[in-house]
Amino acid sequence: MSTTAPWWRSAVIYQVYIRSFADGNGDGVGDIAGLRSRLPYLKSLGVDALWINPWYKSPMADGGYDVADFREIDPLFGTVAEAEQLIEEAHGHGLRVIPDIVPNHTSDQHAWFRAALAARPGSPERERYVFRPGRGPDGTQPPNNWVSVFGGPAWTRLPDGDWYLHLFAPEQPDLNWQHPEVREEFESILRFWFSRGVDGFRIDVAHGLIKDPALPDLPPGPHARHPHWDRDEVHDIFRTWRRLAAEFDGDRAFVAEAWTDTPERLAAYVREDGLHTAFNFDFLMASWDSKDLRTVIDDSLTLLSTVDAPATWVLSNHDVMRHASRYGRKKVTRWSPTEPYRPEGVLDPALGTRRARAAALLMLALPGGAYVYQGEELGLPEVEDLPESVLQDPIWERSGHTDRGRDGCRVPLPWSGRSAPYGFSPDNASAAPWLPQPADWSERTAQAQTGDKASMLELYRTALNLRRDHPALGDSTLTWLDSPEGVLVFSRTPGFTCVVNLSGEPYPLPEHTSVLVSSGPVQDGLLAPDHAAWLAR
Image (tube, rainbow, N blue to C red; front, side):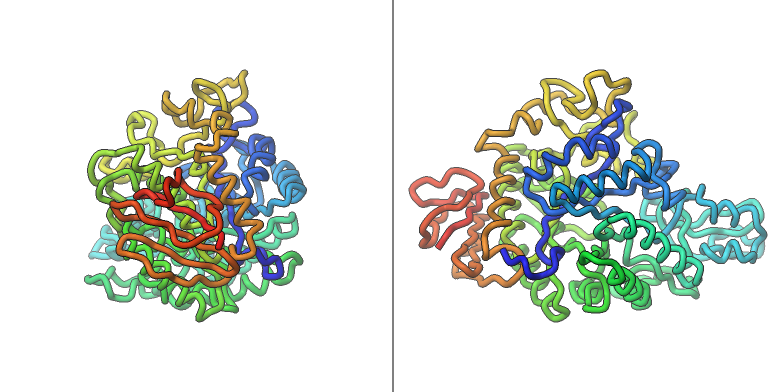
């Protein structure tokens, strides 16, 4: 793999959902101390960097995405000094560190919003957020018909009559990015963390910062221009951020969480003067179908090449059902970012695992970079039967208990042992993990899988280390080769072929000199259904 291009063009980045990764102090919640203790594991896995979900001071109304102070670490996770130690130690292991930044909103406990509540309607303090009078003769109706991503209206009324906007939970008031103080504050926050050694940022809701100042009602129809998602003016912000990152040594980089209607709209975020990379959610949302996957891959690579940006592939994250469970149904449907994923049919764990293994080899063989969500290297499924009494995602309450939310993909990792907490917490822990772990996870621990060549963990280790060393992998191009319906075959130069069999029949492998790695046994030169292989030519 070429090492002359910037690291972010081909990096494999491991997502750390910090409260569920490793608990160092025994309180049942993951923290910086636990993460530091597992850096050797991440190094041995073969990833290049860590993306850490929000660790800032927060009331935790939405798992830390409601930030009260961007320059402080929440005591639940540690301190700024510990964060600095983590960054230094990660760099010592050759791992880069990318925290989350949450610019669309703050916590309602942020000093700015508390000042806004204490001030009068129309005051300067309220101009940093989106406050408006209500509609109707007595102002009792919301300013418009916008709805919260978490369910219910996107507006909350204060006792003084003003309404404030929150596209997520009421505890997450939206900032007004037309206000210069908001822009200046976030530039200062970026510099604060860049000066402490972070290598970049993942930008939460990058597509949502700018709202139509007229705040019109949501228009009918799917193709009307949206009043608060993916507006052209947002790119002015990110051009400034790109210039800011360039002030610091070491190829600091941004990755955007940008949900867009088309690949063309996504490409706008990663132009040469914009952000460096953006998540490819079209790949994540694709069905288990060769035509669908090839179309997504082709469209992504074609459009991103027009702006000379690398693709960034992802199969799972902290907001969606784990792919081992999505793929574990006979029917795997494509879905829209405007709706939660609804699995169809009964879960077949063996089927989901086979497809997840194949999908990992497909993703890691594609040009560009990739993200691995913690636990996918262990083959963890979605925990779909969490008791209602333990659910903590605000979606559960906001939906009137009709949508269980995202807790099922956030269950703490199993590291070792035969019973909970499976090494997630120390032996003398004072509290159980913040979400309960399934009783049958003992064979899924990192300890149990280490050294087992048939395990998901060793598949990931083999593939990631091959990817790091093979000159054909990482950033560059691919060439599709002839194959029957249901089979994807592509080559990469020099001397590499990837085959993914999504059909219902065994597929004879094309000419090769050796099998570098396969998602399952290759017998008599045949690749079984729902399997993938990397070949040397």
